Length: 356
Image 1 (cartoon, rainbow, N blue to C red):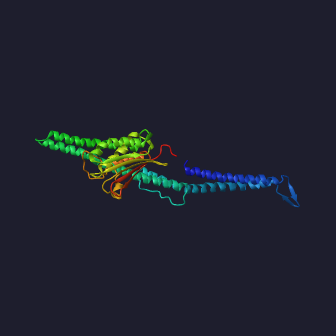
Image 2 (cartoon, rainbow, N blue to C red):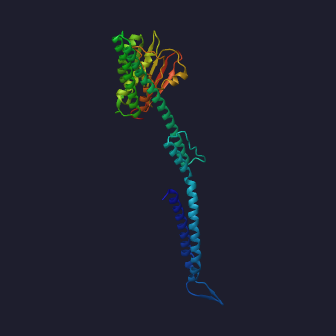
């Protein structure tokens, strides 16, 4: 049976039982005061209990039939009215299953359980639509970025095949460079997917120690570029993946190094243990960045500088995107703030391992 039919039968049963209880109350509390013996008053005969019962039962039966009909008809209408919001939600779910995520229920009326359910469903559809759009943009960008090194390799091989005086060593070096970029991009995409799926083991870590290890790996790059790195802060316990959190800090510090001043640059890495959360702050000097530009830096394949590559900056445009996904996988928040003097302040907020 459908839910509407079940509700209809339930309403009819309630009405019918209520009528029977009312009749039972009449029979128990009124008819018992009527004597069963025959009573004559002058030439008139007073009805006794049996007479009243014979007169009352047919009328009561007709009343019960009417109540049953009203219960069924009224119950069917009430059930339909009550379930109408669920039908709208079901229609929206069917449209979403067919791929239409732009439809919204927008249920009118006062706020009740159905309205709350519809609002939650609309919010879910909005998030799904944004997520799908982001994934489509990411897939398109990833396809483009992966196709580029393959196209370059094919062009190099075709030119070398038609050039009798080709320089084999230069060709190998160039192919190796292009192949390295393709490998780096593939590894970045795999790391991004791993962070999205949250398929990693969590353990209690000191984020300040993880930061020191990450910065130590990038000290040669800082020395080559003449950039001073300051590391310090409070012990900051967090719960997460050591490898992913180290990759998070490496990405952020590397980004702070390559997008810095050409002379006299500075990068500061600090950890703060607050009563409600743990904060990792990475601040660097550099060229002024507009707030609009900062808002796009976490998009995949967005770069803070032009698409030029060198030994120090062979990026694939996924550094900050990976950092944001790793932060979100650890239930944290990544905040980018432009410095008034130029450069960027990156703050990673992570929850405490043991909430207070």
